[in-house]
Image (cartoon, rainbow, N blue to C red):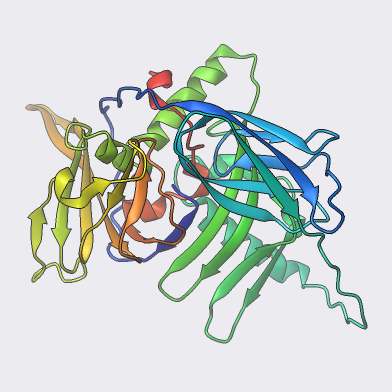
Length: 369
């Protein structure tokens, strides 16, 4: 799941899928080392121990005493670069890397200004806060198989508000630290926005993933299986298969629909990859365009539904999701990520996949066969 989404509730199909799908063949995307310096915007002095990373990946580096960072194995394409340290304003910027030559980047961080004055501090009611935390946790992690295996290491940094209309909002004063034992990642997450309205959820976040070390071969194998399961049939899997030209082979069927809310009168027409994709700025990126809604069905193949004395009855495990563009197009790449923030409205099965199912964008299913 990408880090900028607006989720709407119509119609949500909760389907369990079994079996397997083929895995995308690994594309040789050029990579290089990203080098730069982080400086104090006021004094120009280098800043040490800044966490600089490519958003939603395992690719990052702390700065040294000279403010220098080096991030290796960064794929060609468009990425969001994040620089974070306590005492400074979070810095986020998009970079477009079109070749494998080295590029030096300068990041200037603005000191965080603390407003002082006569402020009355009123603490939140502990019982109300715990109730709000439970609500946030369920919405944020989702209801998938990994949700129960995720926990906030520092939940005390969270605060919550609910306005007169019932709109619920969560904020964090510093990066959230998350332990995901279902997928084997420690996650440092910047919560940009999280708002739940009467019939929608909007959230944005940037995360840096670290693999949890394990000396247990069985545990590593279990994490590989869980990561593969989270990837199969996901929005990211669909986008990667589109760019790589194999969405149908991967189990996806794509349709243009006028209005998924009106099942009796809606028009549904099959669309091919060429009808909705055009070239991007680099070979491994495409521009996705469509009108109204895109309906996507994922079929993981036949599975056993039930047994009887007469034999086994087999059926098809499929799940449906719907996409709506919030702008003219969205840029997607061969790894299944999309670039433009808040450019998609998502409903259906993909709306159920939240942070607990998130994988770093540089996760490669081909390496986890």
